[in-house]
Image (cartoon, rainbow, N blue to C red):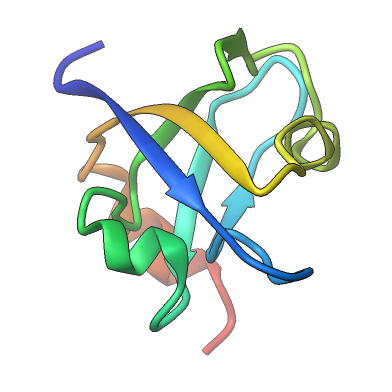
Length: 97
């Protein structure tokens, strides 16, 4: 996939990593929202429309979204993501305001 990159996200306490996912096992997992001041936002490398490929070195294409987040539920997460800006207009039309 074009423009793949590795991003390290660090969190503290019981807060999340700051992104929301759409996707199911066997389908692409698309990041559709980045929370302000979150680890994902502070990294400057994660954007809405990115496709999540790996979490902590494990391919996520066969996992559900919940399983992915549990798998990466430590204080640090290494994600491999790819830019897929063509998804953003579709996501905006589909998601509630």
